[in-house]
Image 1 (cartoon, rainbow, N blue to C red):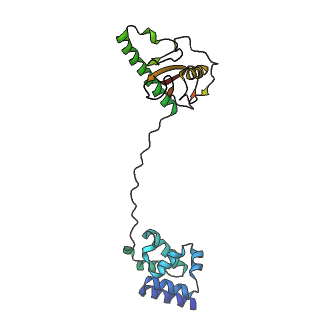
Image 2: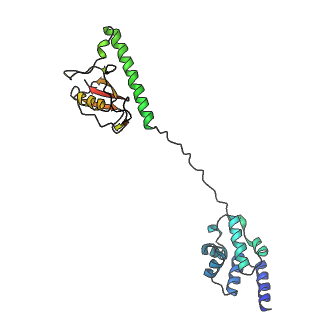
Length: 236
């Protein structure tokens, strides 16, 4: 009978008292601590205290806050249908989510694509050079010769004659070393040992000694196989 009377008194207070005071009195009447309520309801302590202190600013969205209030009031022996109308829904703003920044997928290039582009560019340069020299000096057949020892200058473009490139063991691949700073003869030996073909392009590089490799395509570390094409850019 005493318990029934207590619940009736609590229900009457819930209809006339503020929300926080009603919850706090019900908890204290049962001798329950906030820690006990947190363990039993699994509602974080800060939310239980916010309900009792009517500190609605730290509560989550109304749909979650009302769920916490329903569980907590039922745990305290109160009627949730009588307690929920005391919850000021209008004081709790729905969370506003900021729009996520647009993320653009960066364009990436595979190593095989870079090599293909470099090879096409080298062939274009070769065709342009052959066409220009052919118009100026005749048939231009002198360009298709094996590069000899470097003397005073290096021709703009040199390719090895057909059938004279050394043949390596089929299917053997190796990493192309850094040829920059080496002489043209040393660089050609490295390329030929790999069984690859080569194109030599002469450029003016100021104080760089004539016949010294200043750049290469593909870059150092690229795996090459017999039959691949290596472009050597040499100072002239």
